[in-house]
Image 1 (cartoon, helix red, strand yellow):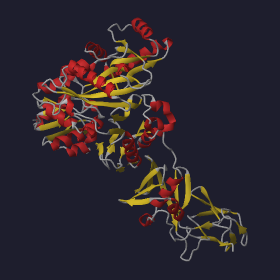
Image 2: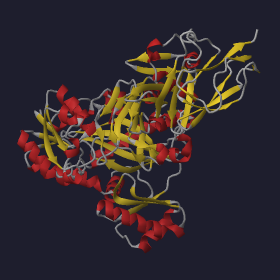
Image 3: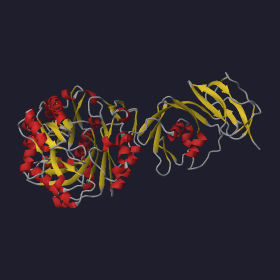
Image 4: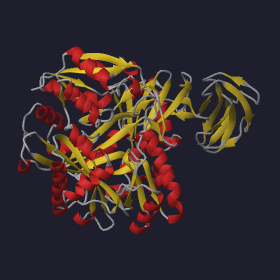
Amino acid sequence: MITKLLIANRGEIACRIIRTARAMGIATVAVYSDADAKALHVRSADEAVHIGPSPAAESYLVGAKIIAAAKETGADAIHPGYGFLSENAGFAQAVIDAGLIWVGPKPASIRAMGLKDAAKQLMRSAGVPVTPGYDGSDQSVERLTAEAEAIGYPVLIKAVAGGGGKGMRKVDAPADFEAALESCKREAKASFSNDEVLLEKWITSPRHIEVQVFGDSHGNVVHLFERDCSLQRRHQKVIEEAPAPGMDEATREAICAAAVRAAKAVDYEGAGTIEFIADASEGLRADRIFFMEMNTRLQVEHPVTEEITGVDLVEWQLRVASGEAIPLKQEELSINGHAIEARLYAEDPAKGFLPSTGRLEHLKFGDLERVETGVEEGGVISPFYDPMIAKLVSHGDTREQAIDDLKYALATTEVWPVRTNAGFVVRAIDDEDFRDAALDTGFIERKGDKLVPLTEPDEAAWKVAAMLSTDRCNEAPLAGFRLNAPKRNTVAISSLDDMRVIDLDQAWSDTLRVVLEDGDLYSTDSGDAPVMTGAVIGETAVVFNEGSAFEFALTARGTGHQHAHDGDIIAPMPGKVIAVDVSEGQAVTAGQRLMVLEAMKMEHALTAPFDGTVTGLSVSAGSQVQVEALLCVVEPSE
């Protein structure tokens, strides 16, 4: 068995691997760049080695530095995680040549699946269904144009060395083909130093289905069922789930058997994923599911497979790399319940998903048994690496339960001031089509702005912010209970370009459920109303409404005079009276404007609390007043 493991990666996957290694009694070594000197994975490992500057090309992608770190610390194995060097056959071979254990497939297997055209040809010969198309060596414009015509439009151009959606173009008509081909080849050359492409028939209603496979050095290969990764944005996965909704047993048996054949065709060892594209226009059918590519590594979404099978895939990786056989036979594996994973990214959906970087001044994940992360409160989201903050993973007896649990966890996740896609994902998984499993890879693009969360706080958020901005949080009443405090118990708060004076008593009364937990306010109305949480962070109150964050500044608070009663009109903040609409002795009705107070370049109307008569009017237009000044009194009608 491996005794000391170096993890050639960072962030949440490094922390994930460290957790399993520690449970197995294996010592761990982390590597880190300048940007990651104080990162969670560095402090979680038993040892850590600095490997260079912040850019990945000068640190995490330099294989020689990583192998040197393993030698320096006496590690006997290297786990690459995913991304970076995980599918680099040259690095895998260098690790083996250095006398170290490579926790991954054989370099030859990585090479066999590294180029999409060669992989398709290999899969075709192994009896694995492949997408109709062209993957030949003739890369001339004339040949590719002719093949596209033969396939029939729309067609998909794909870089043979591509990944992550790069070097990929959909072409709808012959007139657009040559320009799309040139663009695709330029991008492929820049990204992968290889501008060769293949062509595929464009699949209508495409679903991204993948099968987890595992092989060992004793000739055994098993599958651990399928995952659905159809919810993607710009070809990047956002939500993954297992098993695939709508998959019947006959189709599952066919696609999983094909995946096992694919793995055996390359003499596969370790964890891998066979990715398929399904034409789901008539549901999931075995004759409409085609091989797309193989990922020769652990996948980001591997937790959903672990949740439904009860298997620790990292433990299996370490055991198989140490020469052991796969711990379970195929007949011993089964599906238990349903699991969904959401990727929490540091990005702003309201601004075109621009990355959001900076210090995590406040970080609190919603209540789930499994949250995979490589950051913590006080940590930094840097511009150098993938912007994923965490993976939130739910598991339930049913898909509906898993959706509900994940939605609630995302809605109550608090990240500030870094912006996240939490609100966006809440809307996606709560969408009627998602709940009905009406899925395809165009789901997010088709829904468009419907999934983008609120950009301004709603009325309930204003009330929660007002409660957060005062020490009254510690006096949270029972549901529906109205405090017997003076009516003019108010707080002035501002957000964006808006400022309001909130009646705290009314806010408490209108909020059906308010709980203070660990210094944070939690509020939710009954039924389908939004779930909100909030916290005072520094000098501001931040309300998290269904995953979206809104910042409020406390301006001033007024509690009324010692002998105040409900008819006292009190200045909620310092300011200038710019208009007085009533005179002393005048009869007024509830809600009628009495005067206007200007403060912080904003106007606030003061209104009559009930029907009555104005008495004791003490100000006029132009008067400067202080907070809690008594402006006038409205005596209630008999």
